[in-house]
Length: 273
Image 1 (spheres, rainbow, N blue to C red):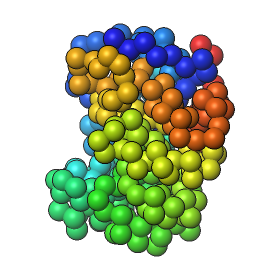
Image 2 (cartoon, rainbow, N blue to C red):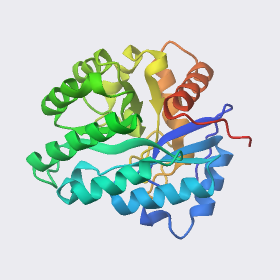
Image 3 (cartoon, rainbow, N blue to C red):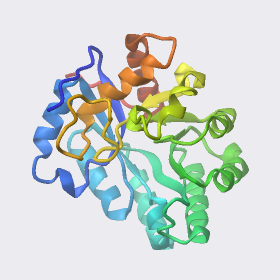
Image 4 (cartoon, rainbow, N blue to C red):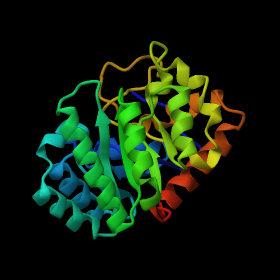
C-alpha cells in the first residue's frame, strides 16, 4: 500500500497512535513504519485518557516510543485542577517528554474560546514548572495564540508549533520567539498546502521537524492514492520528500537534521534497531 522508504532513520514527532483506528492492527502499523525506516515516535496525548495510554505505550517500549501529556484545545472544557494534577504526575516520568498537545483552535471551536485560552495558559504554567518542552497546536487563532505565548515565553523552555498550517507571517512570528516548527502531510496537499512550499525554506534547518499527525493528513503525493483514509507513520518519507523539494538541502541532509533535532528537543536516545 505504501512503498516509500527513507534511507535514513526518521522520527515521527506527532503520531496519535492511541487512536481507536489503530486498535486492531497496531503491530502491523508499527511494522510498516519500521520498513519505511521510521524508527521512533512521539505519541501525542490529546486528552487525559490518551495521555495515560501514550505514557503506557512509551513505558512498555521506551527505545521506540516517547509520549506527551496534555489537553487538546478541543477538550479544553474538560480541563480542571484535578486534570492538571494528573498531567503533572504523568510529566514526572522520563518517558513523557513534552507538555501538550495544547494551544488554540478557533477553526472548529469545539470548546469555548475563553476556556481554550485558560487551558493553554495553565499548560504553559505547567511547562514552566516541570521544565519540559511544549507541543503546541494552533489553527485560525494566531493572534490570541501569539499574544499568550509571548507573555509566557521567558518562563518556558523549548517549543514546537506542531502540524503547522498557517501563513508565512505566522511562521516567522513563531521563529522570532525561538520556536521549532513541525511539518506534516499538509505540505503535500495541492488544494490547501501549497503556501507551505513557498515558506518552508525559511525555517532554519535546526528548527525543522517532520511528523504525520496519523491517523490524520494522509499525504496526497502518494501514488496510486490509497483506498484508506487512515494515515500511518510509514508515510513520513513522503513528507520528507516534499519538504526536500522545497528547500536547498538534500533529502539526506534534511532526514539527518530533523532526526537529530527531534532527539535533542525531546531528549530521546537513538533506537538500537
